[in-house]
Amino acid sequence: MSRIGKKPIAIPAGIEVSVNGTIIDVKKGNKTTSVETHGRVSVEIADNNVVLGKVGEEKESAAFWGTYRALLSNAIDGLNTGFQKSLEINGVGYRAAVKGKVLELQLGYSHPINFEIAEGLEITVEKNLIHVKGADKQQVGQAAAIIRGYRKPEPYKGKGVKYTDEHIVRKAGKTAK
Image (cartoon, rainbow, N blue to C red):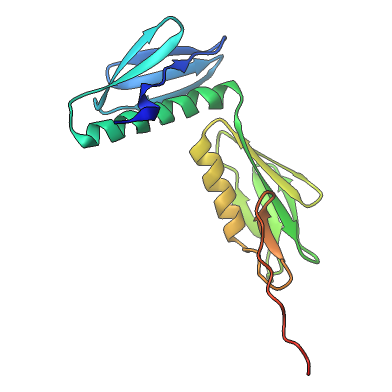
């Protein structure tokens, strides 16, 4: 049985949650996020809380219960506070700059890499740090993973793009005898 699914989700001030059939709409100001449940959970809104319930007694329904509760909680948190991932660029000549809706990366290749900034994301650059911000947790994480994938950190000198909280295990180079 899902321990996550049992917990009610508190609705912060300024956020509206409504249920339209199998779609749960979360709204704050002019921003809206939707979570499609495909009829796998029941949804009740009471006392400024959202409570999800299982549909059926199969093991699969308990898994869906926890999953949709986490997705809805992330949608509410994203509109309320937002999500952020930070990346660090290490290497001589490695740099990044935001030009309009494009993040231009120079990572030691013969050409610059242009990353199109998706709608709903905000990317800022300060010195060797790239900050990816947005309301959708999945979209923020995916964009950060794609940027990191352009030049993963190598284990000898640590050059490349890494998350700021990531620890790179360094290898010793060749030793002369």
